[in-house]
Length: 200
Image (cartoon, rainbow, N blue to C red; front, side, top):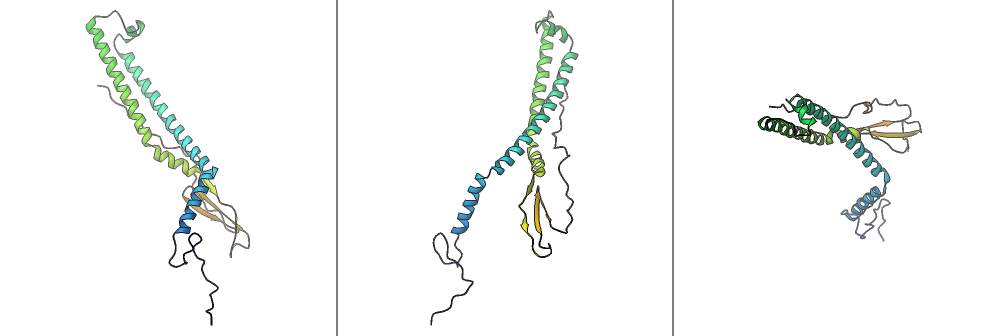
């Protein structure tokens, strides 16, 4: 007499036809490949990537521009305080000054320019180091909504909507109140602090 097969019989591997036990890795590997390909075709990921990158770059560049402008103001103020600098500008760098005095003025200007460049480089480096925080900030502003799903028991036969914002997830169902969530909107993205080099 032939043995009866259970109604819960498992299917063999769809890729190589191997028996269900032990579990064959082929189906999982193909599913992961198909998922990666579908994700690459999905325009939403590219839109998300572009938006976060553009916002982050704009924030860093705006911060750096402000820091550079402040340093430039400080730099020009210092140069204006140097003896005979106004005369130096009036004569386009060749004022009628004694050679020793002109050499001293040139050295002071060169030293100030070096400090200015070092300060700008330091500000830019510190701004770039803020990218992880700024990227996290804008990713935290992204809101992802899943399609409505058929609710189970306790939902009154209604529909349930899942919403994910940033790394936090809340479930909104019929008869339930919305969970209060801290929103990123309205907050200011991180700003790199300005480091001022004292002139010697």
